Image (cartoon, rainbow, N blue to C red; front, side, top):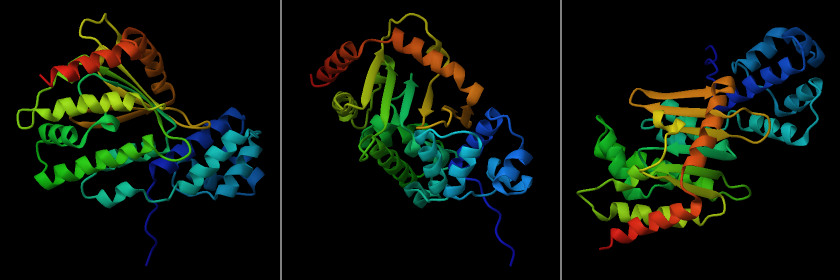
Length: 288
C-alpha cells in the first residue's frame, strides 16, 4: 500500500519559508546548500516547500552552513523542527475547527507576542465564556447549538497561552470603544462580566489593553481589524485578516505595513490608564 502524501502543517511551512529566506540571505543556491549537507538538491527544495520533514539536528547543521551561530535562532528553529509534526489539542475538534482556524491556533500557540486591533468585538483571548457563546451564535449562519458550544470551548482553551509556564504570550490589544456598547438581550449581565474580565486581564503583566475612543481622530485602523503574530527567533511576523469569506494570512513584505499601522493606531488610542478608567466606568454603569 503506498504511503499517504505528507500534508504540510503550518509549523512546517513556517520552518521551510524561514530556511529559504536564510539560505537566500547567505547567498547560496539550493544545490550549493544541499551539497554542503551531503544531500541532493530536491531534498532541500522539498524541505523549504514543506513537503518533506527535516530532523532537528539537521536544522542546526544547516543553519551553520548559512553562517548562523546565534543561539536564539538555533534554538527557535530547532524547536520548530521538533514540533513540526506534533499534534495540538485543537485537533480533537477537527470536525468543528476549520483548517484555516486550526492554522491560526497553531500560530498562536507558538507565538511570543500578538498585537491585535479589534474594532468590532472583544479579542478571543480576552473573552468570557458567555460572551464567546453569544457572539459565535450571532455570527454563524449554519452552526448547531452543540457546535457553537464546542467553538466556545476552543476559544476559551486558546486563552491558556496567556498563563503558560515559562514565557506566557505577550498580548497588546487595542479595542474600539464601540465594541463595549454591545447589548445581549437574553443575558444582560454578559457585557458587565466581559468588562470585568478586561479589567482583570489588564492587571496581568503580559497583557496590555487600550481603548480607541468613539471621538478619535482618523487612523489606519478604520479600514478593518487585524492580528499581528510575532515569534521568537528569525521567523517573520504573520498577519491575520478575517471576514465572512474566511481568513487571509500575510507574512514577509505583505505583513510589514501592519507594524507601522499598529504603531499609529496605538498612538491614537487612549493610554492604558485612561482605558482602564473608561472600562471601569462602563462596568459600573451596567450595575445601575
